[in-house]
Structure formats: structure tokens, C-alpha cells
Image: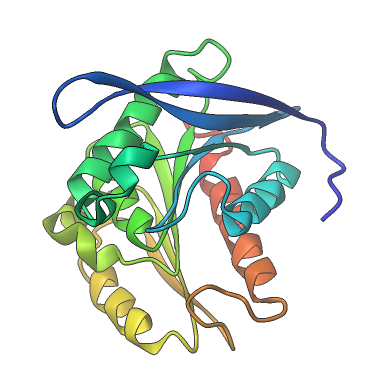
Length: 223
């Protein structure tokens, strides 16, 4: 897509802790349109990274609605080699909370209303983090596994949108079950003809449009 919004892009390094307790840094890319009405942190799914073309596409659509984005790696390359880490929702959620602390400590982003966007297992991490972070005002899951957030679903009070492909039948059923456990404003949006990765023509565009509308509605003017 061709952007018509001016966006300032910075490479950043997010402080976090390894399981051993040693400090580490997670690379990310912070993009802030002018003007900016909110900031969405992305949590990618298993086997993905901050370079995910699908998440970057969604991020570009959010920029057109004057919403900033932070795409970052939840795991170091060494950690990602261990599949246990890839599916450790508690670890991924803590990395997302580290990113929340990072943006709240930066002068240019400290006052921005925050949202979380998660895909696949990253959606579960986003929901766990949202249940623990009062500064999160909205959550969107794309092709996510919110069921993997477990009991944390009942602690999520931020408005939550679950976007699922109409042909992603197993994940759609899991999302319907998870929706029942969310306590705040919630919605399930089914994109017709889409499978799990939203690879079909027009389906990713529709998911991005839904996400942008949700974040614009719930982040603008939030405090």
C-alpha cells in the first residue's frame, strides 16, 4: 500500500530478562505517524518475527489511521531455537509487558493510549499482558489462539476484537469458546473465505481494516 501519512521510524532496543535472570535486549521498530493518537504493540506468532510481512502490512494500515506501532522480537534467535520458548505464553507475555514498560518510559510515547495486536500464540500473550496492564485500552487478535491465555481471559477488561478466517474452522471454534470468557467489551469478526494465514486475496486487507477501526475507536481520546 502507498502511505499518505508522514511516519517517523526508529530502530529501538527493548530491555528484558532471560530466564536465567541475565539482561538482554530485544530489537524492534517504532513507527509514529504525525499526528499520533495511540500506539499498538505487536506480538507475533510462533515461527515469526518483527519482520513478519503480514504484521507489517497491518502496521501500515494502522499508520493511515494515525496510530503508531511497535514491532519487536519477543525472543532472541537463541531462545527461538527452543520450541518450548516459542509456546511459553507466560514468557511471551512478560516480554510484551517489558515492551509496555519501555514505551511508557519514553518521553515521546509515555502519554499515548496503548493497544496490543497479537497473531497466533502472540494473541494469547497479548491477552495475558492486557489482563495485567491497566494502560492497555484495546486488544486485537488475528488468527489467534486466545484459548491459550487460560484463566487470564477473565481478567481482560480492555475491549477485545477476535478476527478469524471463515475457513479456519478449528481456530474459529476455539475463538468462540474464548469469547465467552472475556468480561469486557468483545466482538468476534469472521472474515469470509480466509484461512489461518489470511493469504487469500483481500482477506488480510479486511482484517487490517477491522483492526484499524477497532483501535481508532478505542484508543483515540483514551487516558
